[in-house]
Every structure is written in structure tokens, then in C-alpha cells.
Image 1 (cartoon, rainbow, N blue to C red):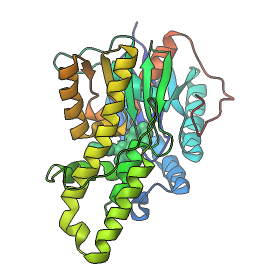
Image 2 (image 1 turned 90 degrees about the vertical axis):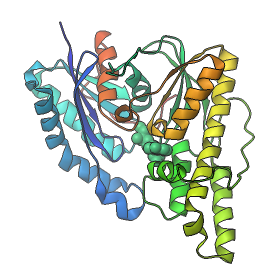
Image 3 (image 1 turned 180 degrees about the vertical axis):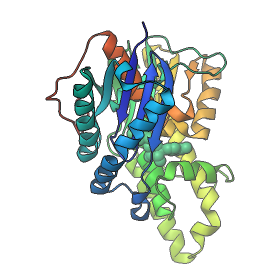
Length: 339
Ligand code: KG4
Ligand code: ZN
């Protein structure tokens, strides 16, 4: 018998709901929040309020798109953390009440593990097959940068993480310095396509082991722009594409160097990427190329499952459902990862 899971994601500034029938997506709905645009970043209070306005219509559209009645649902899975507490609370409270009304269980999902598990969502892509265990996943989002050994749908070992900023944050901060809109990652990705990626050089961090650091790159980007602006106030305008391409190249080189080291150290050649930054076109190309050279089996998520979405939360919920791993009505959100 098929299992129908409603997934709810509200960890940051996207209110998302999805319906999965086993590992197939029937609906994947996302309402973004334009309210943050003029602030150049997410304002937690406004995010929480916008989630409250969006959640009921988003779930309604998801169920209608899926073409199912809510009584057909077997469980509701929601993001418990990490994320903004006020935002998470909206998704959690909704899930508890909605599931209680239907008399079905609730399932908590970890946002970062769900990004990884999005690789198990059935894809229409030709030749698709899910990663086999164990595989390495480079999880790169706005708040996290990790290399994870994924041993099963339930076992994750973090073998590298950022000591300061996340890769997505480095994209976003570089964009902010250039006066570009938030989130900066997609804007830099687009500009970089037109630019010379060797136009500017930024020192790469010397971080031991498989850990990352991006704050130094951000600072050297800031100083370079500031120093040039002192001599030419049109510097950014004249060098937008070169700056974007150069900072993007640097960030990708750092990510790929550590990923290569992780593969050598663990002997694992089944390699995946996940999280918002995995939407980056240059990272995708680079990984495909390096993968070919190193004999890796590479797994790149579809664009709709790279950035935040609720299909990945429902997918994570599905695996827990099979294990009867349900949450109690007393479950509370967490802002930071427990491990
Ligand atoms: O996973 P995600 O949607 O949200 C978090 O869990 O944080 O990741 C958002 C991050 C932002 O920093 C955004 O700038 C970045 O992903 N991002 C990108 C691209 N699309 C989104 N970074 C580089 N290139 C992109 N195409
Ligand atoms: Zn995310």
C-alpha cells in the first residue's frame, strides 16, 4: 500500500508544503517572502509573520495539486531545525494541529539531513538512480557547509564542517558588498557566466583536516573592493562580472579541494551535493568534471530540490515513517544542529 506524507518546511524565509506518494512527488509548493528584499537579508520577525499568513493556503494548494483528500494522508513531516525559531514554530504548530485533527502521526525532520535525502526523491531524469551507501555528501546552504558520510537513510557522520561562515553566506555577503540583491548566490552565478574568473585572486584559507573557513575570503573580498573604490568609484560597476566570477571560482575551489580530500581519506567515490549552493551552475559543472577524472559516481540534485523545499522534508519523513519513528505533541524546535 502506498504511503502519503505531507511535508512542511518553514525554517527560514520560504513557506513550503509538499505531498509525496512513497518517493514520488505529487505536489511541491513554495511561497517565497518578498518582504525581506528591501532589508538585504531575512528579518526573523517578518519571516515568522509571513509564514503564519502563507501556511494554510500553501498546504491547501499542495493538497489540491496532489489531487488527494487530507484523510488519505498517513503522516505529517515538518522541519524541526536548524533554523529561525519563530519560523520553525509556525510549521511545527501547524503540523501538530493538522495531524491531531486527522488522527495521524507527526514526524520531525532535520533540515540538513533532509537536503541530503532529497536524492532519494524519484526523478524523471534519464538514467537516474539514487546514491548507494555509503556515499559522501557536500551539503552547502546559507547556514551550513558540511561533508557528511551517509551510511543509511538514518545514519549520518559529519567529517568536515565550516568553522565560521557557510559557503552560501560567502556568496550572499560578496553580493551584498557589491550592492546586489539577497540572496546573492543566484545573482553571482548569473553574473559569473559573463566574467573572467581569474580577474581577481583571493587567498584561500589554510584549514587543517576536512573543515572549512570562508570568513577570510569574505574579508579579502571586502578589502579589495574598498581599496579599489577609493581610487575609482565606478569600480564595482566596471568589474561586476569579473568580481562575481573570481569569488565564485575561489569558493568552488575550496569546496572541491576538501571534497577530493574526503574521498581520498574515506575511499568513497559515490559523491553527492545538496543544499542551496548545489544549484550553482559552476559547482555542478566542476563536480561533473572532477567526478569524471576521479572515477566518481556523481549525484547532483534537480534544481527544485537544491534550494529549500518541502519535498525533501516529506522524503525524510517517509523513511522515518517506515521505521515508526514518530514525534510527540510536546516536540519543540531547535535553532542549531544537535550534532
Ligand atoms: O538551502 P538553502 O535554500 O537555504 C538554507 O538552508 O540556508 O540555501 C540558500 C543559500 C543562499 O546562501 C543562496 O545564496 C545560495 O543558497 N544559493 C546559491 C545559488 N542558489 C542559491 N549559491 C550559489 N549559486 C546559486 N545558483
Ligand atoms: Zn536549506
